Structures are given as structure tokens and as C-alpha cells.
Image 1 (cartoon, rainbow, N blue to C red):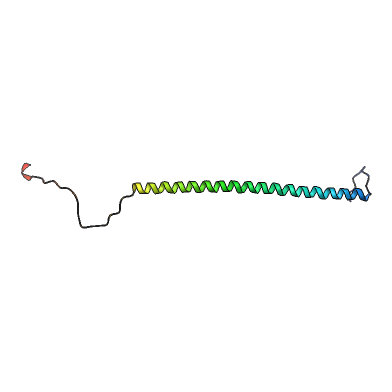
Image 2 (image 1 turned 30 degrees about the vertical axis):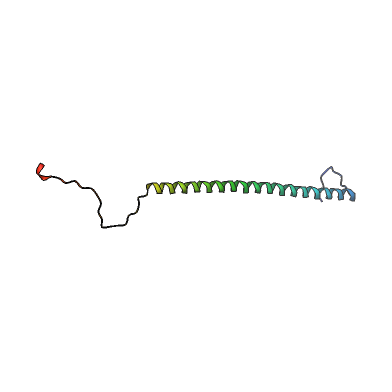
Length: 97
């Protein structure tokens, strides 16, 4: 036991028992409050990470929808090669020149 100068040593067993019980109760309350604080902090972290995950999913979804709309607007229709040539023609009279 550490003896502090100018402090009388208490040898009463009842006082020692009460001090030990007080220390145990204080230690238990400290553990309980620490666990509650830990649960609050972990809950906050889970909440914030869930909100961020949903937000990033929403942004990714919107970007993919915009890309899909852009592709359908600017996409040229695919044509299979054929032997038919379509078009207009104008007959040029060689005598007028």
C-alpha cells in the first residue's frame, strides 16, 4: 500500500469494504457509460455510412439513366448492308450547255 505523507492510515475493515464497494460501483458505472457511448458512436457511424451509400447509389443510378437517354438520342440506327441503292436523280440536258 502506498502511504501518502501526513495522511493517517485507516485500518477499519468496514471503511475498507465501503471503499472497495465504491470503487467497484464506480468502475461498473464507467464501463456502462463507456459501452453506451460506444453504441451511440457506432450507431451514428452506421447511420452516416448508410445515408452516404444510398446517396451514392442514387447518383450512380441517375448517371446511368442519363447515359442511357444520351445513347438513345445520338445512336444511329443500325442498317444491314443491302444491294438496293435509294436516292433521287435529276436528268441533266447536255444540249443546254
